[in-house]
Length: 482
Image (cartoon, rainbow, N blue to C red; front, side, top):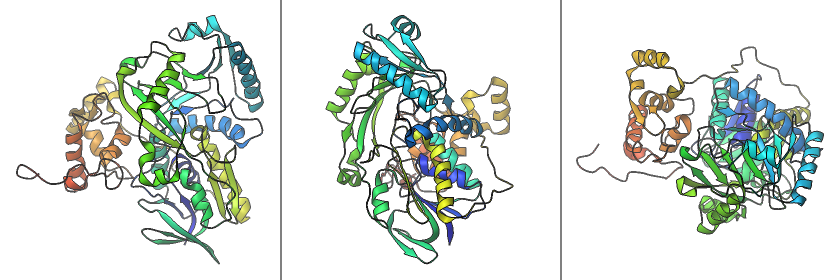
């Protein structure tokens, strides 16, 4: 029997696994997909929000500001890309200038540090490519950008090194109460556990309803994005928000930690049947047109022809206008409805949830003496010339560049194949070392990455996937086989 089982391994489940791995507990993570971070963690704006937007006294307000500081520290310890570039909420009317003052006041109440209200001249000095119709902005220097799936992987890998078990391809189908706790049935096996964290994202209401009376509903929202080439990466230097409205925080424009430019999202309700069919993350001509038109309100000369990829993500909006962090039953904690600023808040959500579970179980967990708090990894392109030469002497595969767009070497790809969570797909490699993320999107390096992954995992090339289960790339051998 496990002490604690986490259902779902997006950023919230991963952060919870990392925090639980500090304790003398037998912890299991159940993930329905064949890799971690494949839900809304993989497809979002990658923004660490400063915390001025949530209503004061809400869980969002409390955990966002705390989460920013925890995220900075975790990224430093776990070698995750993070850049505190700050954010600007831009006003285009006198009414919106008044709204900026309200956001500023709310930020003060929430404990957001060092905010400033900028006039038009100050704003256009910081961001000369913004529209001349921009009248002012709220500047929050504590906001930043991060690689969300890299952070999710780092947290989960470190948790595994500290003894947490991860069971992929385990979709939960039933939960029942037993005298010692709970019995969880998946499509693969049956598990018994004393306690449960429900971190199932857009399906967190479904998991809750397997064992407890319904008291919230997830109403998923899809948002579509453009990812622009690095040639556009310096069009803006901060996260550029438009003033929030009843439909959300609007379309943003932001650099990414890898030097690209991200533009989006819009907001569209998604049916649960679409989630099950996989059609929830498609792109539409109308949706992308809407994103482009709204984005050009901020930056009129935005060059969307430099798009190297379009994608969409589904957010776990709920019928409750706050995070849903609650004891559903003794020893069963919901970490649900984690929409924006969920990424920013995840490390703080994990700590808050564990404290709630300790209260629910009426016990204090004991810390380990040998907790591994850090993670190191090799990013070849970030080394200086002497470090590169020394590494190539030790392992010549680091001298073979496979992904030319991103300068990713064979050594990095082979290392990624043997990470604590072994990938079985090209996108799994992409998430671990960035191979295939550049302008050609794997068009040149993809076949070679497939070959290397098959070799390292001792698999047939026919078994290597593009991403999720059943996303086969090769159907049969041709021209004499492999």
